[in-house]
Amino acid sequence: MTDFRGLLEALSAAKVDFVIVGGLASTAHGSARLTRDIDIVYARSADNLKRLVAALAPHRPYLRGAPPGLPFLWDDATIQRGLNFTLTTTLGDIDLLGEIAGGGRFEDLISHTVELEMFGLACRCIDLPTLIHVKRAAGRPKDLEVLAELEALLEERDDR
Amino acid sequence: MSPPLGPDPVIEAYKKDVDRTLLRANLRRTVTERIEALIELQKLADEARRAGKRAKPNR
Image (cartoon, rainbow over the protein chains, first blue to last red):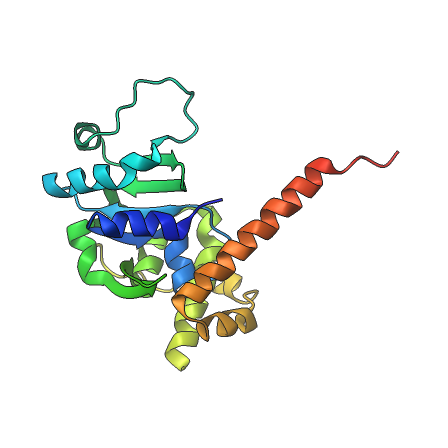
């Protein structure tokens, strides 16, 4: 099971620039659906890659679903060479996204976020209209029910 | 950021089946309470999965 608090604390303590997207963002906005990992869009600056590496290194990140023993090195050079990483850690699963369809990179998304308090931490989370936008842009049939719930949440929230 | 998308009739059709009572209850919670409810849901799902694996088929 994913230790949401532990992962968020690790990222926050290392001062990683990131935005929460995906299922955890849906939950934060009021979704009742089950999600099992954390998806974040992280800033690709050299300093931030170092902070991201430092934040997760104690929790032994490895490529999720890959066979053991691959020469996967958790360092900023590895992140620099790639963009999106689906990882498993001792705290649970986390997806590190350099960019997302319909939303772009961290710098594009930051003005479409809200600061939410999670476990006493101030966390940047994609705002609900933008979350709906990027899920629609992704165009995955499995997201249709999710999208219906998120749009209903937006209506309910606006009615309050 | 790409331009805004208009209403989608497929999503509108799915929306009719959304349990809004559950959503209203969630909106009354704090963000942390919503995540704690998710963690409880994860535990329940994991226990149900384990129970399924333990179950012996009826003969």
